[in-house]
Image (cartoon, rainbow, N blue to C red; front, side, top):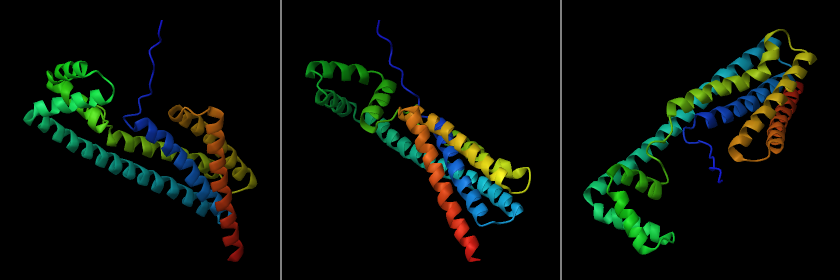
Amino acid sequence: MTVPEHHRDLSSGGLRAAVFGASDGLVSNVSLILGSDGARVAGDVLRIAGIAGLLGGAFSMAAGEYVSMRAQREAFEHEIEIERRELHDNPEGEQRELEGIYIRRGVAPAVARELSAEIMSDPDVALVTHAHEELGVDPAALGSPVKAALSSFVAFAVGAFVPLAPFLGGERSGVTVGLAIGLTGLGACVVGISIAYFTSRPKLFSAGRSLLICALAGGITYLVGSLIGIAR
């Protein structure tokens, strides 16, 4: 018995935005916090910087995700509307175009002609088929800009909160810094495993890569912050 092939639904953008938003939140805020710690700023200043980084980054990610997905959706909607008019104004030409696509893919001309005629007999099926074959999109699955923006905002905020959390309960110390680094490393591994869902990469590889990126970003900004602190 053949098992149906399962494909992940990546069209809405919400889940993808959440995973990558959390990754960005982790990396950006641990870099900001460790850079501030390296410069030996006061604990209150460090907390304010972390909170500002969380809020500013979350709003920026949400706005960017919304604008980019809205622009992409509107562009596709425009092209689909052009296709809808062409199907209405020149159905014979559109049928020949579809027939040609199938022939170029190796379908026998007679079969391609019969298949394209069957598809063109239903306007809704014809539109979906032409949009898929010519534009590479499904008119019913263009993604939700609002969903992507909200997912990105929440995910970034959650990711950015992880390295900030230890500093909210008291003054900066070696313990709070170590706890922030440990929580960020754990969060990076979780994000890496989640990213593997989209890329089909080995989970260990993806987790290690995410952890390395966080470590490099945090380490470099800590070093820069230390140099700035020394120079003052």
